[in-house]
Image 1 (cartoon, rainbow, N blue to C red):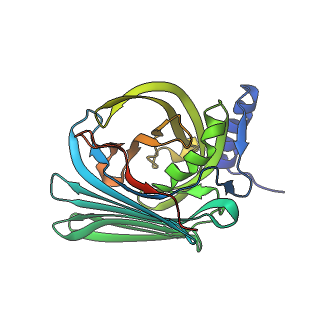
Image 2: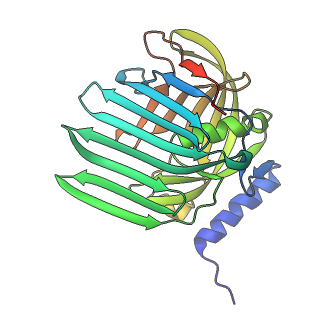
Length: 274
C-alpha cells in the first residue's frame, strides 16, 4: 500500500481545484522550444525599492555563440555593496535549457552571500553570513532539464512561453529557490493583463506576467517564496521591461531595464554569430 504524504494531498487538491475552475494549464513536458533568437546585448538596468528609491545601478552583458547564451549582471549598490549574477543557457537542438546560475553579494570586498545551481549535476549551494558566522548548505535536487530555471534564467524562459501566456494560457514550469537552503518547486506562469508603466523615462504598454510558486500549505510556515512579477513589451520578440522579485537578503526589489536617466533598455544589440 502506497502512503501519500500530506504535501502530496495538498498538491492534488490544488490541481483538482484548477481543473474544476476551468484553468487551462500547459505543462512543458520535456524542453522549452526556442521561439526567438537571442543576440549580443549591453544594457544598463537599475535596482530600486518598490517606492522607486534607487538602490543600485547595473550593467548587463549577454553573449551568444554556438554553446548558447552567457549573461552577466553587476549592480553597484549605493551602500557600497556589489551584486553579481551570472547564468549559462543552452539552445542546442532548438530547445532552451538553463545549465548554471550563480548569484553573490560582496560587502566590504568580502562575499557575504552566494548561491549557485548546476543544472547538469543537480547540485545546489548556498553560503550565508549571520553574526559574522558563515553557513554553507548543499542539496542534490532532481531537476527536469529544459523546464527548470532560476534567477535571470526565468526571463529567457518567459520570453519563449510568452505567445501562449499572453493569450491567457497558464504554463507550468519548475524553479529553484534559496530559502536559503536550495529548494525545488513547481511554478505556475500566468498573465495578469496589459498595463502602462514608466521605465527609462518613458511610458510603455506592457504585459504583466506572474510566476506563482506552488508551495504546499504545510511548507509555507518556513518557506518564504512570494510571487514574482515581470513586465514585457508586446513586440516580437517581447522585451523585458521590469521585474519585482525577491532578491535574497535584500527582500523584494524592482529591476528596470532602463536606467533612471532615461537610457534605452539595451544598446549594442547584434545578431548571434553562426
